[in-house]
Length: 313
Image (tube, rainbow, N blue to C red; front, top):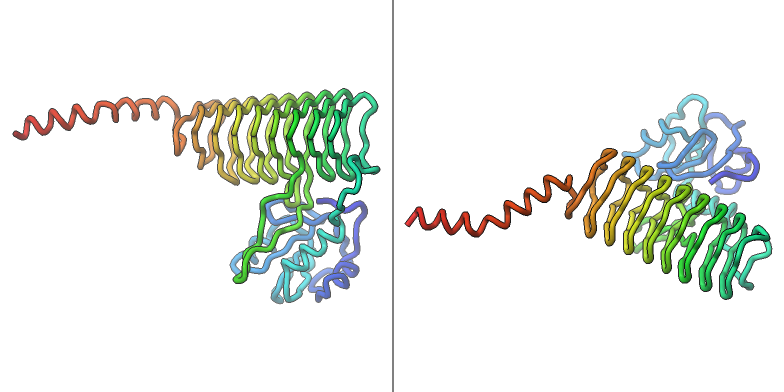
């Protein structure tokens, strides 16, 4: 998530009541979780074993709950509750806005777009040329939709990330500061759900087609000209290449990378990265030819056991 304008670190320290260690003349240009950080970003860490990962990341400013040595050119913001401080900054710059009308006045909709009845469009949404939003669709805050996009009835775009921090007393929800970006010539089927990123963007590449009841988790990046059949589900932060085909009820876990020109056959469960140009099947998914050989061998197992027992007798 990027700020509209750079913010002095002194101002941020005052907001979260933090002590500055390191360069106190820096400016923050955004705020991101560790998986998405870039130079100029604020991130946070509150578990000591992850300090090195955060301190050596691309982030320029790190909120943390203990004093430690600051890497050159960076700054630390030390406070008791690092996560609470991080989350409060996201909320300050991306506050929750409750809708009181179907289309928020800050939404920008191209005059050629078709918006059917009962569509709800949140703040800071942009909808491009010749896009068709069918009845009963919800497009939540900060979503960006390109040209010639079709979104069928009942879909919800830009839902909050399913992302919680665990405490002894229970779970606390992160404020989602990311967006959903749907590029040109994308089709979204009926009753699909696409989560916004926690701090980055969920992206659906140009020309991609989603069937009904497809779910994309927070921060998923889908390449161009992909085809996903009904009830596909993709876990958060997974990256899908170009020209990927996922048949019905394929499930892909979080934080994976799926290469270009991959096909995953129906009802498969993907739990590991997949190289480009391969066909996969099964749960856990394996290369299809190998998986089919395994299935063929298993079918012969009863006869093999019967013959083995006869020989023993």
